[in-house]
Image (cartoon, rainbow, N blue to C red; front, side, top):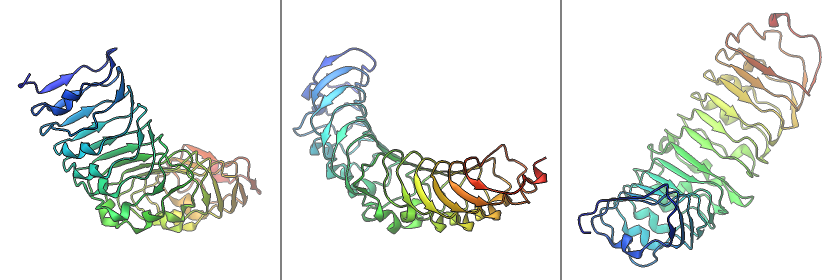
Length: 315
């Protein structure tokens, strides 16, 4: 079928393996086999798909590895393999996919590290590799982190090192709007750096230890800061009071936050939710509370060691 451009048979009950001929069609632009019951391995031989733009294989039962020959599909823009049983490493040849925008590999059995070559792709918009068994360094500083990347979601095992985040140039991460790193982080938050356009930061429901970095106070665009259900210790830095656009601040259930809540936090007029419950905070609630929080909808301070009276401004 030399004129075939689109193969779209998603959402069926197709089974068996993927014919190798699909990866040797010189004219096909879209291959969508998602949400079927396909099994077996992807073709490990040479790929001859010079016009392929979309390869959507998600939610099947594919096994084997991602073949290095994927690097031959140089026009690929959307590669989705989420929801399979693919194992092995992510091949460094993905760096050859110069037009790649979406790289989605969540819910597999991948091991090894994320190749730095992936982040040399200037067109890259979204990466999702959560729910795998990746390890080793996340060498973002070795790649060319460009401003187009806006979504980066992954799951890390205890040995997934993130230290190299601190070396990433700020100007290369200006559109990192979401960092959704949930479940099984175990490293201190001192590794965090400033991304000048970051709006949402979610690291809740992990095992993060260490203290709250003062550098968070420099992210002036931050709207939501979710760090609840971790093992963060120490005091709350007053630098958080500089987050003038913050709407939600949540450090609930860290158990070992100590000291007082800086009064500057209660001067952030944009705040809608403040959460510090289930910690070991002490002192008094600032008497200015309520005067500078016209948008406040929820204030959660239970299960701490506060004393004194509830400020009259609450009324």
